[in-house]
Length: 190
Image (cartoon, rainbow, N blue to C red; front, top):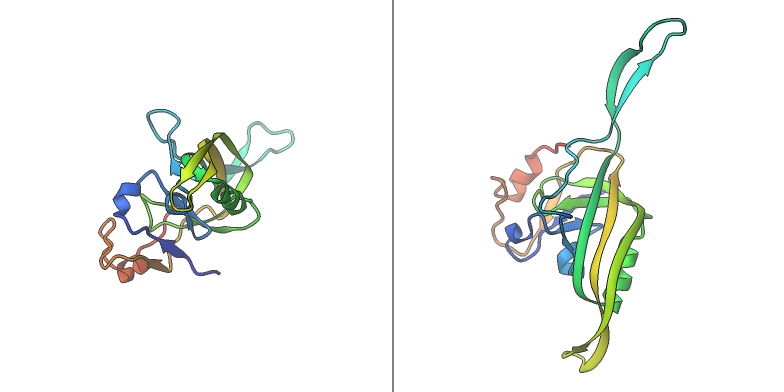
């Protein structure tokens, strides 16, 4: 099993709660300027993985026999927005969300929970393209502003605790977990 690494941004992590996520060692906001958005006034979250009941019908008998319920995969539908993304970053983002690889997925509001997931379906984007003057290069470049959506599926529906945390902070405290040692003993939950 691969080592799970949670990359916490340099800014106070609470600023990213319900806004940022990380997948395949890339941070949505710091690497691409992508922020999660809600499709209304509230965020939607699946509280549990997909459930499947195991049952059997007996020929000639009434009803169905129930044996148990199994958890299948857990699906994460993420809506996002971006503003002023360069053409180079747009190409990099398309490669990042290509859907070929399983990788670590975590959300800023719960960095102690890591899922092994992959992009499923086709990521969607709607955008407008405009020119902007890049003061660093002194050139006019193309930029993109818009929104999109991506779906991640964790086929093993349970989260695990990251093996270690990378950060530029001297001190990290999230939900009472004050150090890398505390994080390493925290248990993963679905």
